[in-house]
Length: 114
Image (cartoon, rainbow, N blue to C red; front, side, top):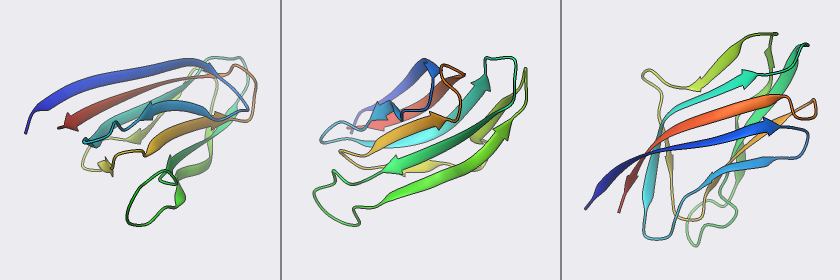
């Protein structure tokens, strides 16, 4: 099995769910860090979801990692990090949504295992 560290980013995330990462086929991925930053001049509220609806086996749910989380002006929120990790299976997607247009930047640090 090969391990590969990756970093995925998205900028100006708004009110439509932005797919930050999709787990490739024949790959398991561990999210080792996920930070979302407020890039506008007012507070925003974000949701982060793990969408497993494309899985070929097991639970095919879309679940929130965090929902309605406020991020003040000039701040960021560490959604995943420290001792918390999230495992993704092939076809799973990581999605970020804000309540304000073009208001959030996100970065995910990942470990892909193939």
